[in-house]
Length: 308
View 1 (cartoon, rainbow, N blue to C red):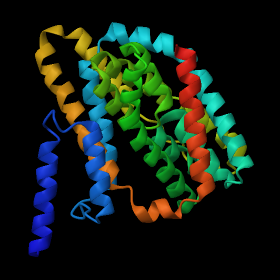
View 2: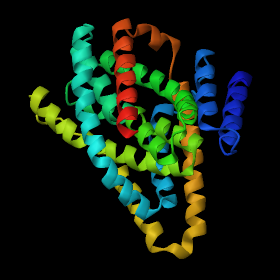
View 3: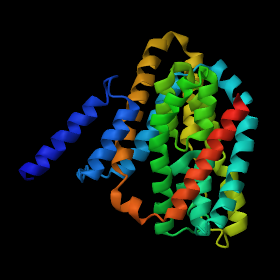
């Protein structure tokens, strides 16, 4: 290992350490990750893609130990109808926009599902079902990730400017922001109650991966051997909430686990930002970006009006 490799590894170890401190917030982590990516600084000494996926899922589960079961049940019941309407409407409008802007059909479907459900996770789950090519998948991911980055910075500012309550902002963030990591980041930047509401509604939304994948399998899929990916970590998230409810004497330990989950999410956002490259952005057609932006703006505005 040469000197430059040692220096690079030390830089990443230092950044990983920073993620444990409260001043190194989710938006800052994402910005630093993007900046390092644009400078060509990547953690080549490990597979960041696999680590990010595992880290995201583990962080969500750990955050479940800090959730209040009563709030979760109430939020799930209140948010189910809004979630169902937003998912179906977003996919339909997204496909229509893609057709009008002459975006490749499968790319448009991936962007629509990513916007409607849960960003990169939905794209990863749906892509084998519709037999999307690698280029179509990467295009959709870049569009979603770039808009995620913007949302993480903009939503808390807009929410405060409009005087949104913690609950309303949590619902809005969960519906209008693509990826779970950015929803959690925006929610935590706005407040603790917003974080709980946003996380619960977002994970309820993520369950729509299953019916959406089944529906698309009926439309697209001829080869029934392709398996539909089910987000099992959501079940573990629910189990963590129930355990915390049944063992109140362990509350202090559960708070530590929840804190670890929140800081793990910050680290995940650092790695997600670092996965966005200039080359990938340049490859994405203008039509796909325009479609993604228009769909995102429509969902954001419509959901905010509905919630208010």
